[in-house]
Amino acid sequence: MPAIDFRQARSQLGLAEVLALLGFVPHRRHGAQLRGPCPLHRARSATRRSFAAHLGKNAWHDFRCGAGGNALDLWAAVTRQPLHAAVLDLCQRLGRAVPWQAAPARTTRTVARGETPMPQP
Image (cartoon, rainbow, N blue to C red; front, side, top):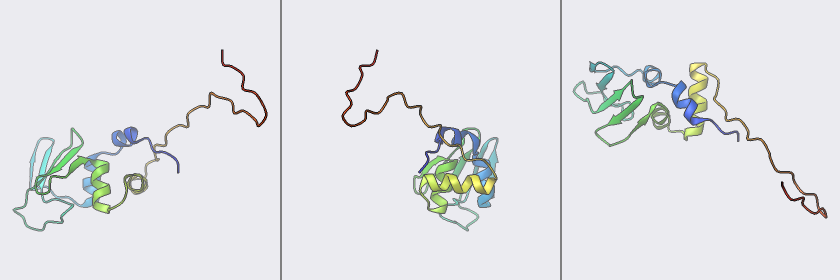
């Protein structure tokens, strides 16, 4: 399975986009901070404000259960997918290219059977 560049994915996929996909409607907004019902628990009560998201930091925290993380962690938790699958799903839904890691260049030569390895200079 190809490797995803999670650092690049975190910088490309913002928390605001994930919250919009989830239909999150904040009860309170203070600058870049949003408070409201947790998308993980699907709280329906208007008084539930246990979920906090900071769009500038691309981070969220649920004070009810203690969960938190970045946009990718939230999407993985809500959709109940492993992180790799969640990134693929999120990129597809947002119409973004998946940030694949570049394959490392091979620097060593494989030795054929019966051949003596050459010392590296």
